[in-house]
Length: 336
View (cartoon, rainbow, N blue to C red):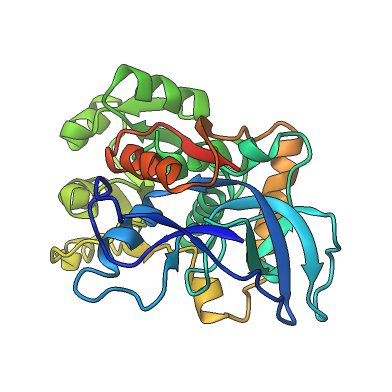
């Protein structure tokens, strides 16, 4: 089968930054689905892995990137339940296994679900990783109460992939007062479409948030730059509030700044459950099933905003170049 991978961390403009390779079709393990991939989404995480994992020492074999995927089940392992050949599934994968830049892929059935039936595979492919991240952030990490509740939520980076789903989930599943950050007219408009009640400028976040008539946020989701916004988050978080972030930082954070408010800092990485095969790993499949129902009943709209065509090195190089600008609204999808 055809796949796209890399050996050494190189700028995306370099010829060998991504290249096509032939691989054997993998054989399902006991808990695996073998999926013929129809469409994928390209995430900032894809570019981070390419840029960081082989700086000094090349990989021994082509590293196949890719997390989000939608495809049709071709075979199932002997311990698989709930799936059969011919099912269309969606999932965000496991970084310890070969990714979705390939014609076929194995995925543990516990972190997959039947894809929504009301949208095309290319639209569904935009959703798994960001849906899992947003859902886990709100309800597993921050433990946001589902209605009724009158608490407040600040989403920093509301126009990105995860922010877009967070805004929708918060609007449809909670009674939170939702504020998002954005600075451009098009990103402000997008955040309001996604469900934000208000949008403020992140460039002077404390002043902008307070000017909106709000003093504190009970919950803060940070999807942009943890270190850059740290002081603002410490100022804006409510007493006994919770801050959640997905963005790692090499800078030292003064976590004692949260002590006086008894506030919490929570990390969210949706890969934690599959990487460590946690006892509740199957919750990811359950979340994706829930998300599929929300898409099918019209509560949640997919966040696909741009689609490229074809499994190939040039297509995926273009996708990485677009992702690395940091200016994407919604999600970038590749249809195979």
